[in-house]
Image (cartoon, rainbow, N blue to C red):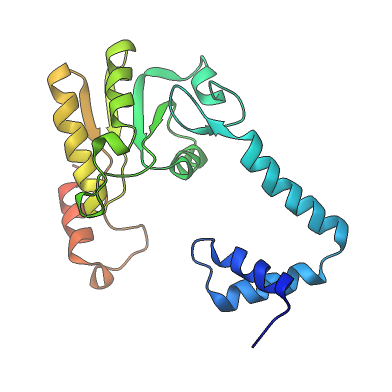
Amino acid sequence: MHYPTPISRLIDGFMKLPGIGPKTASRLAFHVLDMNEEDVLSFAKSLADAKRELTYCSHCHYITDTDPCRICNDTTRDAAVVCIVQESKDVMAMEKMQEYSGLYHVLHGAISPMDGIGPEDVKIPELLKRLQNDEIQEVIIATNPTIEGEATAMYISRMVKPTGIKVTRIAHGLPVGGDLEYADEVTLSKAIEGRREL
């Protein structure tokens, strides 16, 4: 079906978002048309403001509107422990848990030789420099349990261990309430590896 140019452009814009296909993009576009103009302008301003006003912390590379970010500036946090995550949204997930009180380092990706992404393409050089300057005693690697995430974790571990800094990896395995019969081999393997004494 041929839509008027303005709605086609809006649909195309929504389709650039991850996980949004043509049907969902069309639904969103027509929903925007049904919104009142004030709400549409407010939404558009929020998009522009987020792009214009947000930056990355010069210390940990987390998304922020102040530099350094609020987490790095928080003197109550344990500066001896740094949790390494792949993306800013991973920091948000860790913070929701409210059990981790250390600092973070956001890589903005993972090593993926197949895609031409090496250690220098993510924030690993910045991490290694940071580890030389700060009083960090432990690094917790919390990259995703994917081939790329595991490769990144192994690389970081090999680079950090010689410095004498303790390197740990978060456990991966079965979710609470999950059934063994539905778990894949990698998940079961990680669950066995991450077992602990009761």
